[in-house]
Image 1: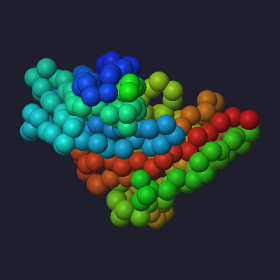
Image 2 (image 1 turned 30 degrees about the vertical axis):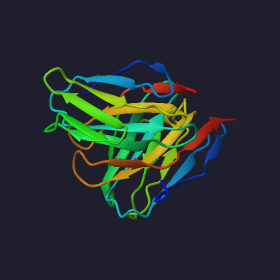
Image 3 (image 1 turned 120 degrees about the vertical axis):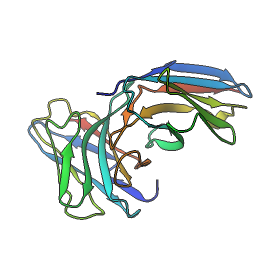
Image 4 (image 1 turned 90 degrees about the vertical axis):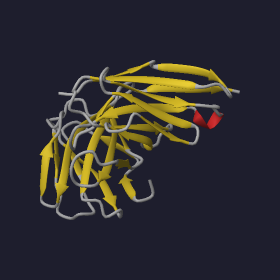
Length: 110
Length: 113
């Protein structure tokens, strides 16, 4: 089955700096890669996703890049703000099932 | 997500007891999913359903059961056979077929008394 690895597990950044989270996947058939943000006591919220026919996608301060050859994808958050503090999960899918990474706890220092 | 309602928010189970977690949606999504989340881990799929009256096991279905009698509802029962039920349970919905975005409810936290 699909195995998704996510790094780092924790990330602390100064407000205004950028944050980067990286994920690798094992199944070359995977072709859909969503990213979720989870705040304490809440369910994950979809923040951006990318499909395998696209190399990069951007939405305001967040962007995702995908390298299918290397089987890795990354989330980039620019100009971080305190409200970006949360746990972020990457996932990969080649059909109905999402396989999730273990999560990255991001802390934005004021 | 206001369109997906999970209840209760907190639930306690006694030894030997079955408990049922509710998930209701008004997003008109065909597919519904149950995930389990443990501290420091990603989400793991328990069961999923792509159509009414049909459902399939996920990666960790042992000790759990589901039903899908209505499009809007997908309850999860944690049976006494599940020996380590303490976790955060998340319900999600999405379109039918592969590679559709999934949207999550706010979860039910289950603990053992």
